[in-house]
Length: 509
Image (cartoon, rainbow, N blue to C red; front, side, top):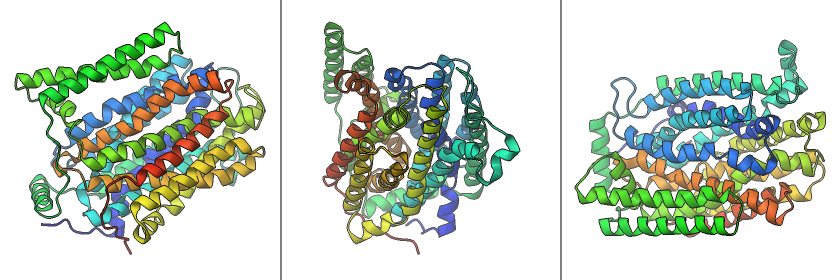
């Protein structure tokens, strides 16, 4: 048996929910630092406050993936129950975030909001692998990139559009772009309200307009794929190996923690060292449970982490450096642009808020460019290869980030964001298309969740070391974080050439 090829509109419907998901993420990425600074956060601490998002994803996504692989609802299927539950919770959190009266509440709401968005988002990646044959998956992820671009672009631009009264939209609301100290401007708050509504509606569209293969058909497809081209075999992980890896990570984490204390280094680094020690402890605990023949979700999750297919391991390095770059931009774009180009860090000033809104415009351009080039990337991949296509896109993105330092006129940053937008479209499609062909079908959701580790870990690393780097080497000038991000993105493109990927790429007519 072979999965049937889906029509353009079927792929459209199954991807439409990403429009709302990315609308929510765009509002979060473009405005969270602004909200934190408005509520009194120091620039040097922004990376730590952002940690709620990646840490939440690190925990939530593999767990949701593991359980979605084992779910079947008579009406909603395998993945769609998670789409719907996440959308409801995320919409509520989006309404609460811009109404946070104090900083600690905003940080807590970010944690809840990101967890809810992850509940919806993670199964969407597996949804493509479930429903599309291998030759259509590049197109499927490109469609997701298109909706991510549209949703992210409009979401990022919305506060600016309110402020500038585009199409007369602010005539209906009369919203102010400035507010007293410690209060979120109305343009931001109402943008979040609109995002909450769109998030729910878009995800509901996919839930109602898409179908999933029932378990018996899905099992038949799985056997057929294994009998045909198959997937990469999983490495056998012995209890001894799992114990050794866990013990090694535990020792590294503890020694690093002691060095941070001894040399009185920036406390942000504890996040990284303690995290390594904790993962090592969990590996060791899972190995001990396996000795007593325990077979449960925790043991399977911690053991399968060491059974990743070869392609997935190779892509881990690519993902690490590309997402390190993106996280650098999300954290420091607002403070970097407002201080380096607009010359102010006063969050109550009109000039700061003008610069902050312009960052929203830049993020919007990134998303809209991603939407425009989303379907050109599969064509480039077909003419060359997916590896070369990803290298080209990431190199353009890296040059775009580095150019922030060289620009004094904010209008020219629009050109920089064209390169970043091209890279963003590729980051959201090419690695996932290369990954799905290497995964066992019965663990698609789980490994898609684990793949999120290589998005989350670089974010944790960025949050741990970027503040330290800025204060130690760059006189606390946030613009240098964007330069470091650009170099990281170019390195990610070079590492793509190491990935094993011989899959055929089809372009839907």
